[in-house]
Image (cartoon, rainbow, N blue to C red; front, side, top):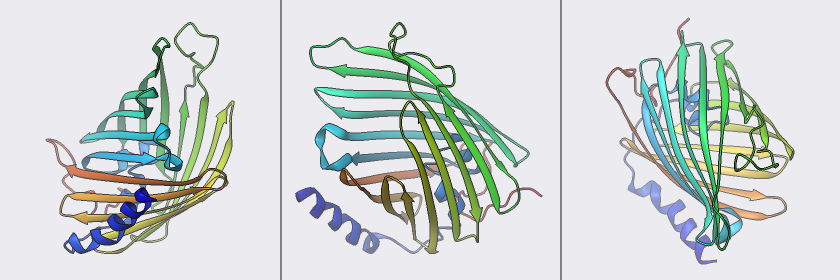
Length: 272
């Protein structure tokens, strides 16, 4: 209950701390945490995003994530680290990847992941795998992408008989306007679950944007609030079987030498 009260206080107090700024279009906002990493190549600026999620209000499922995206020209470097769990048991994931944008139309990325599992009184397990993804603009308004995780079917702890699950994601977007974009995700894990999710990202005000996601498993609502180059993210999801999960995030965007001069929250159009 205490966590929910603090979450609601943050949700309703943050807008009063912000200055009115131009949030820009919904495209870049929708691609910050895309299921297809290559979509981030269509965000001109670099950024660092930190998030913390308490799945189902259980300390054992707390997840902390740091995502660094470095953009220089048509090249992008992704660095990320994530931990899920608590002191007695948890999983660590460290990732590094490279992507390239071809002609402002097609982006391709490959990422390598180190997986570590720790538990009291058990040996630390080490694993490695990778994923590949692509994202392209079919028209000015229609975009498609995919990502395949562990396509080589690598195994846990290198010599284990248990294979790291393969994951397939197909993602499409329709840009209704600069302020509104719709997305559709089809996800399959082998072995594991199948999921379909539809979402809408809307940026109606200068300092405010929000999204709504509806899938077979859960309902997710989130908002982004801006203060200069800093962005605050507040998110809540409800799993139909497991319950409520709050999530907060902080994003800072910046430029590096050779990067696109346009601000990633400004209106960004692809080359014709």
